[in-house]
Length: 234
Image 1 (cartoon, rainbow, N blue to C red):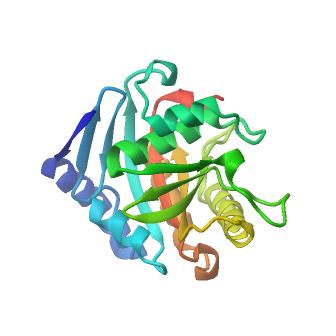
Image 2: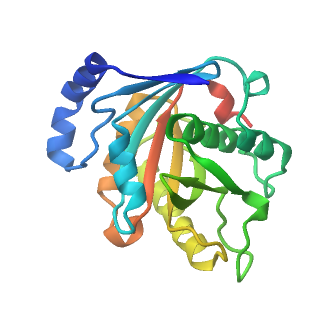
């Protein structure tokens, strides 16, 4: 269980520091504008007006970037997880090393936006097989979605706009390919990107703006900043 609050002071502060970015890049969902807070026993999440995410998710054509910040209160193994997250925890992923980031991705969507888990990574079917795959499916805002999860990490030095653009290009192309080959019936996908700071969130947004519309397609990019290292270490 958790509670949701609207923090107008947070929203005003974040809006002022992002006013220039919004004017220059014309992204219609500036970083955490009109911020809301989800407060639960596992984590605290700061997110923008849920209407912005709902509008993008429910539209067959809209894309865009949505921002969240997560403060993890306990290790994943100590969390009281939702039924869907427990199911993901019990299922092996398809040979990857990002199990925790995927479980926390769903748990965030479930707690903050009411997502229901559909299929886990190994349950999603494709034809032909062997291409890009999606990490899980869910139903959110009455819309069937695929969700691909990635982490913006650089082992040596700081993340740059060029790094962010390469990551986005690779992952968004993978989203298009998995959507093309899937035998599931999702309407669109969310690309969920974990970053370590507010600065990296801004880099992702700047890189996103530079990409061609054909690559963005109707994919919604959800960026979550967290200082907790667990999501980046498995």
